[in-house]
Amino acid sequence: MSYFKISFWRDATERAIKTAAQSALLVFGADQLDVFAADWGAAFGFAAGGAVLSILTSLASRNIGEADTASAA
Image (cartoon, rainbow, N blue to C red):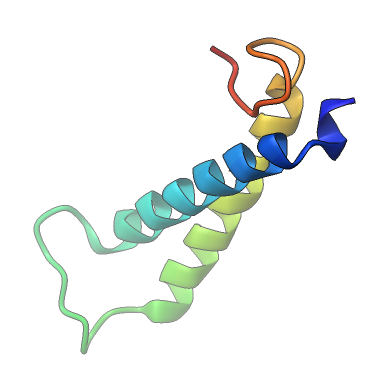
């Protein structure tokens, strides 16, 4: 079962980290990032939520794409 393969979890983790970073940037907007006035709590919340959704998507995609990966393609 691919859930127990290291390659699956490596792919899923990489995707979750990318999604977390993208979700955190969503809080700040594309044209404004003031690190001193940023709402880091909200950024962390969005990043964590994005990472969870990414992992769930990877789990749901495991039998769709290439075997033993988190990809749906």
